[in-house]
Image (cartoon, rainbow, N blue to C red):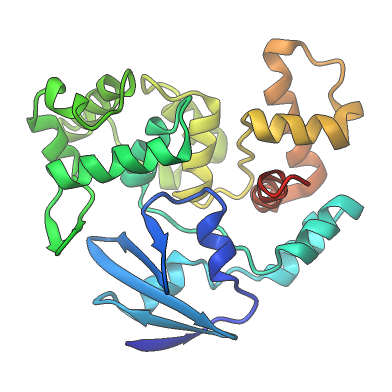
Length: 275
């Protein structure tokens, strides 16, 4: 057990806003990251952490290095965003492993959070390694590539199972350099990710934001589209229906600036709470 000074951080908001899928809260939050179990609880401006992982990993994972004051000052362009910042102050993006993030969001396609969590849990139990009783590591691409597609289907992924198997095989065989995207621009990374079967613009943007820290990414799903249309529709009302989500993201990058990914998460949280 150790403590981490974490001012301007809200653990509950950061883990309950739909960006991660392997955390559960009872008396404290428990999750798995980097092949280890993490138990976390917040007391004021301090995090109480029980894990084999070093303090530096936890600080990086929860992006405690982000200067929220600077981020707020740039994205706080109007009354709506400033009200969301006030309500959900301390909500931070979580720095996720690219492979786990990619597969998690492939599983999220046309799916509910409950079903996403169940599929990921089953996949870890079937193809990951047990860390401690009831907790499993996220399976590697090599582990997934070795199994039969019908076995992956037992994880209740539906049509997504073949997409998971295909990208796992490509990475295991060296046909796709997932981690190389870190050194690419946002545009280059998005272009690479959408080459993967089952990855559209929204999933690519989620991976770029949550795994690669490209904060200019602005994922647009049904929830974000609706809230953006409600408050900012004049800025993209002439966009063709097939291009509307791209127009929304382009507007958000111009309007909210280089930290628009943070703006997206606050808007998403507002939608979850029925703003």
